[in-house]
Length: 396
Ligand code: SF4
Image (cartoon, rainbow, N blue to C red; front, side):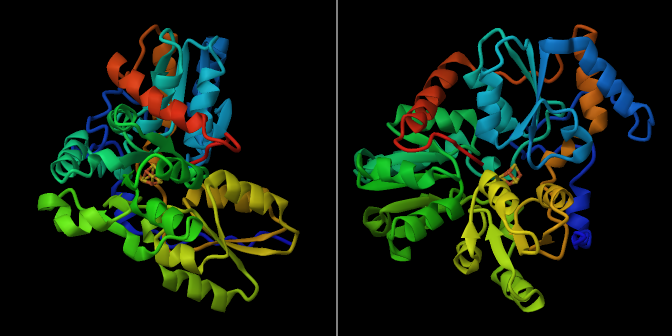
């Protein structure tokens, strides 16, 4: 059967966010200083190949599943954010780790690698809109409120991998752990063995879905802390009564899917299986057949019978690649409009060529570093996650 993947309609917003400008509100918040080759240069693929060959084992390139094909073809390893950070640590011979991903991922790679290894993000303005929704100043203000109410001691912070190094360090300092979309249930179970409440950062959807669907809590056990409102927009009673204090953050890509998308695809494609990422809203995951991290989505579709139909609710580059790799299955994008991650898409071929050629010329461009104290406490939170019982595979 030929793949029936159809290109969704472009959305003006998604396209506007691409390009080489920067947004000062992003996690990275800087303009990429690169003197980039023109995107129209027909020699870009050859230039990237030649630079990579010249660098040899001095460079190791990591590519996140949501990256464009034009750069992922040069990746030495592909995967989710945590698997890629582990891959970086597993290659101490590489002097340079070039991360085709976003800022928090490059920070995690710096935390988990040797001090002699230098992590490079080809476009330093590639941040993550979800990570941007929790700044360290906001989180410390929230914690001070919990201390004022006398409930901080009963609260264990848990932060999703998709957060800045500063937030991971805050979590480590205050007795908490990092989690990923595949071990959030184990991480929350661990946290509730140590405290009565969890402050879950920064993705409210992953926190709510894990608490309610996996751990059997009620929606009433959860409150949403809005960092842009005085005292989080909550009463003291609400904070005292909640078991899950969910940070008001979300992924701008997965947040676009709606329950209506699920209803429509079921009507259009009888027998379709709907598989979505847990960063989707509670309404969407409640209607889906399968909820899973990017690695689980890939594994499930790869193992599926030929002729089966799948509607996939995750980033478009990954869904397109799955459709190309599995022409014997019907793979449909859950939304009808483009849903690329605009910040992931900042890493394009001109940025990759510029980064690799700079390394060849002896300059390290866009090096991502995390200071020693932040590294220490972030690693404490990461190590607590790694020590959780059960499979250690950790996936975004
Ligand atoms: S897909 Fe969402 S969570 Fe992942 S990098 Fe993009 S904005 Fe951040």
